[in-house]
Image (spheres, helix red, strand yellow):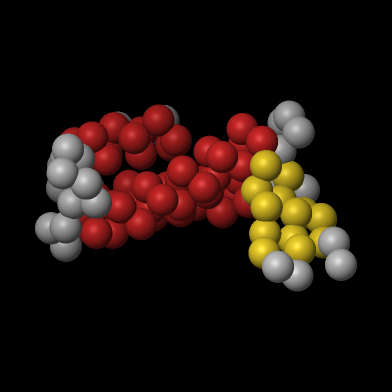
Length: 92
């Protein structure tokens, strides 16, 4: 890992570094996959195929169009593991 970390302040939380950025992107993808499963696309140019390709970039597993729920669960596991791996710091 690099200088990635999660710092908690009373005013909010700061997520730093490339690994922290990937974690936030994974949680955003997790949310988008949930919307897509109900037929709602997060942006005009997004497709289910593009979302599943993004999920593959995290999990390294290919997904069929019918596997949105599986991809969503796998991305959530990846993001949770990354959050657990990043150092947390609490500042007053």
